[in-house]
Image 1 (cartoon, rainbow, N blue to C red):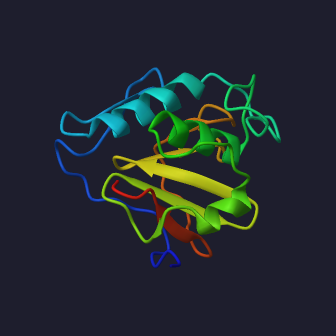
Image 2 (image 1 turned 30 degrees about the vertical axis):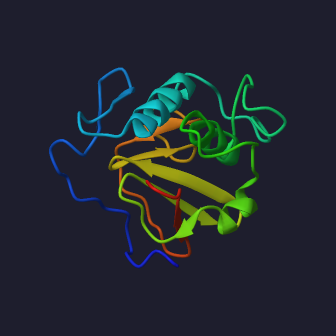
Length: 151
């Protein structure tokens, strides 16, 4: 399934939407499932890490991460991935379409997540590159949309 919107947008629903604190860390919504809260905590743990091409591919634990390494780390923390994947492997990951809590956007050469309404991505310029929560919208033309089963 290709992303149908020109830009990534999300409905904001109190209790189901995370927010980014001034320190760049996300706070999980109160009603989020435990797995989602673990994913948000894992993404927060990466927000100080640098972007390193190939980072997180050999092991979930590395000194820096690229897009697929960061996505793999977060999904692993939620119990939804057993080994790190490269971006192209996410075309077949999980189920097609948007998830209730977690959505994966993948195109050739890049992958990122939206968790509880917030984008976790290595691209862009907000507070430097590397795995970060991004408050800006992102163009999603050409991206395929997947989600972990049950989320």
